[in-house]
Length: 111
Image (cartoon, rainbow, N blue to C red; front, side, top):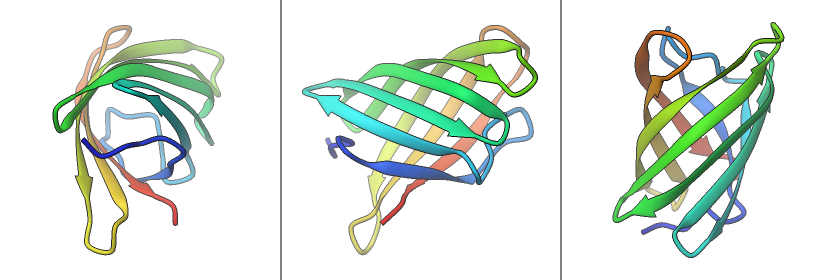
């Protein structure tokens, strides 16, 4: 598994059901299989994801305080990839628990 510890990522692509945007940045820490990330961006005042790696996948739950003042969350299963040149990409398959919808977001490492 590729380590996400210390990685800073930005949203490269977002689904119409997603709230994150290209201005959203994610800050990862990883200890063993456990992963934590904080994220912020134009539509998200404060977000947190907590999960663990399972082989080449990252599985987590997320909760976010949105710019609207609403709190929403859900669950994600992600593929973690190393791109040519060494940068890390996370392809997130998310499902909301507090609103309807699901989709795919892509996060790329800021280098």
